[in-house]
Length: 111
Image 1 (cartoon, one colour):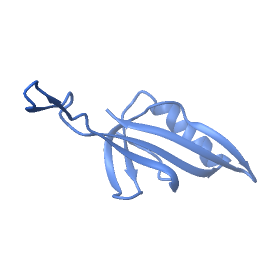
Image 2 (image 1 turned 45 degrees about the horizontal axis):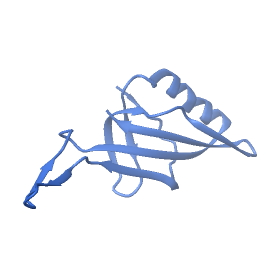
Image 3 (image 1 turned 180 degrees about the vertical axis):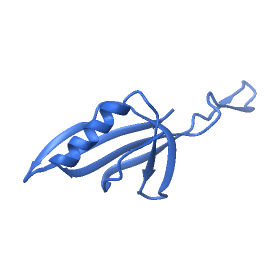
Image 4 (image 1 turned 90 degrees about the vertical axis):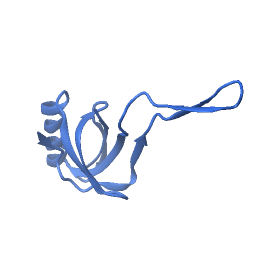
């Protein structure tokens, strides 16, 4: 399985969201019933990088080669950990910063 490139991740603007679909419903007598549509907790990441033009091209190539293929990802933010079986949620977003630098935003989700 491919691994997401290990470029430095900006903590400002990057985020990790735990997706857990637990829902508590109430019967007419007030009794609570819990339910979940998926068995395991899922994750969503917004990962921001400030990259050189060459590194941004490398990340775009990784996206092009793996946009339909799961890959591994190492989150370096709070509670940093390695995650497997991720995919891109949408295409990469690029913002030119000048001076040969580009802000790149990647949105990733567990499958």
